[in-house]
Length: 317
Picture 1 (cartoon, rainbow, N blue to C red):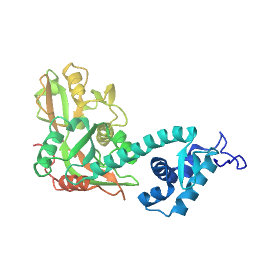
Picture 2: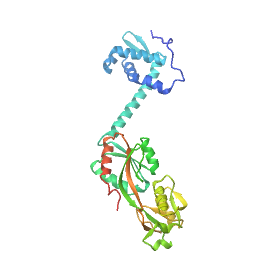
Picture 3: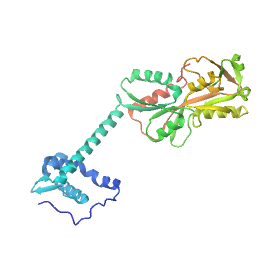
Picture 4: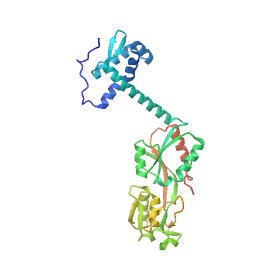
């Protein structure tokens, strides 16, 4: 006869899901083993746990659920209708756990593992493809999950565990993060090709104080650098347009809608002139960042070492 557990209080519908999971999870594999063999002794041998421990675990599982999962017949057992329903869900849950375990083991594999790598939009055309090509010479089967975004958004993804490493600018100095400077880019004042300044090769930024600027939106590293350099030159830039892509800004400049402080283009852009900045250090530093104290998988460690080895030669000339 099946045991009755009506005397024990059942978990109420208002019980926290987390409490339920912590209560049931350690016993699910044991339940599936008993249900599969329909014999406690054989299940204990397969699971390599004492029979008495397994028997007590099944009784407690039924008590915690407030439902009879087994009908007992001496040393053998059979599933009740509730037990069969529960088994179907348990097997799906255990299969999902196994799949997840296989996935994280595969991601951590030194040869074929995965690196979640974030980088600025401006590095997507040449810099990152070149880095990945060079890295895969010695690590041909390492996989990458690539994320392009602006600096602050990438740092948030880093903190959330969605990225292993990111290339960003400025080089962050924030609690919980480790960052290393890798390279720098000289910024130029980009003006329309028919602008009076277009005939110049170099310019002091203060000479552009009366110009209308187009810039990236607040929150972008290059926007902070632009604001800082202009203030250093003695003025606040008058901003007409804010965008999300440097090449879009170049297009706005070519259309005569303003001037911009930008890194060198991937390919020359017609319709604009690019002037070197003199009198102050107009650069943006590029760095790599990762979570402090976060253990690296072998592929992440290998890619981090590779990036650090490229200090001073990260960016194309």
